[in-house]
Image (cartoon, rainbow, N blue to C red):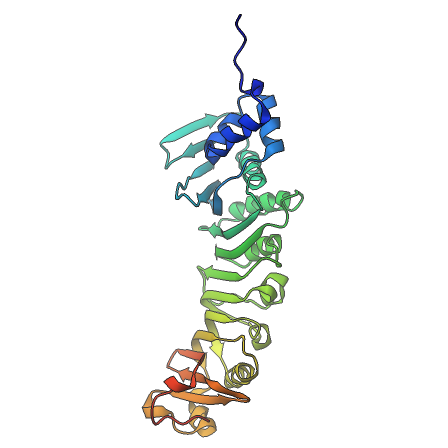
Length: 326
């Protein structure tokens, strides 16, 4: 007596064991074999090994790069076809398919949403967004994609670290609100243009909740009051004023969470006033040391160079011999 073989005939516990031993790509392939299997997998939501992901927006294309803790990274590219439809490729164009009646943005969103549904707790170690073009169409379809995400159960996206590469501040203002400020610990901004205004960005909840900040390419208008909640900062700031230096010094003296701030700058009015305020620097190295009230173990080290300042909380016993502690 014969019976038709089917995975769906297996007991649920066996099916769950099978799914537990499949990788993310295999599970997604299995989902597409039948409606019943798709429904079962979507109900079970088998554990995945996704740790982070990257979305890259180019000229009429989206690249999606999920990364796994077993180092089996993958790349999926959704490319708008010149005469309609779209191309989908994986593994650097080795596997490519043309879909004549499909919208690349719809396909990217559906696959991305499926990916988010299988992300275990939904908390990623890192999310990265890349905008390698200033093309207005690229910004428009990226905004469309994120508008859709904001209406799903996956909103807000949960990540410990968020990194973005950008040509203008528009992508930051569109995307950053999608990130759960309650989970965020690290922020990185890497601009392709100098002198962008960060006054709006520094008021956002995600900025206020992060503990580590990194910014490249000399941004403008970052109030010193928006910086003092960070533990660590490495940033390029267009201008560093004497007033900002004095405010940071006072904040370091009363805020034990502030550990190390490295700030490069293009312009400063502070150099000619530092000796007048703090006395001669130690051995002409432009370093000064400040005692912390009610703290006998640590001091604040302040360094000033031709294009950078450094504030650091250090142990008192590593202050160079002969250096004064102010």
